[in-house]
Length: 224
Image 1 (cartoon, rainbow, N blue to C red):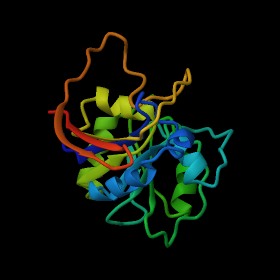
Image 2 (cartoon, rainbow, N blue to C red):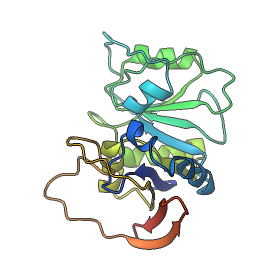
Image 3 (cartoon, rainbow, N blue to C red):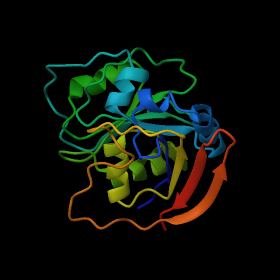
Image 4 (spheres, rainbow, N blue to C red):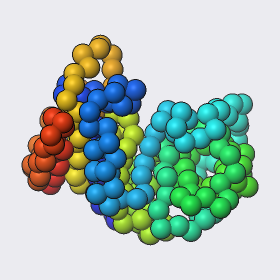
């Protein structure tokens, strides 16, 4: 299997919470974005919820039938970098993407509707459909390298996406900007969520530490 070099880059509070509305209030928010530039991974992966609020037109598609039920992909636009969205069943609605300086690329499972994929084609949005019920992350990363030429990317999604990539052994590096503040609210998303309860912790190797005058700390870990 081929795969890009994958960095999970996130900002957290000191108690590991990642709610964007909360972290935006902490000192260090600007450091998160400068660090994102510094890791040199212009292709980035987000989840459906993040995409719906920050990247798409905010609408959801409903009543789609006729799942594709096979692995397929289509590169509607060739680019050096993409905004990749993980959307298992293809529910997020998009505006026309022709002429975008950083085009979208949607990764879905094979449960996605053929009508949805046709709509992506009309709007100039590239896509990958792999995995019978859930997205086959390893296979999707293989397609990204071999067919889209993506060699390096950053995951900037939510805890479940981060946890899924971590559990699949696909993350090479974890980059964490810790803002000087505590959240403390219950039922808030954390850096990694959703790994099965029978899994052991994954050991990490500290690669770099930077501290800043405002109390922010940037940690970089290797997973291997």
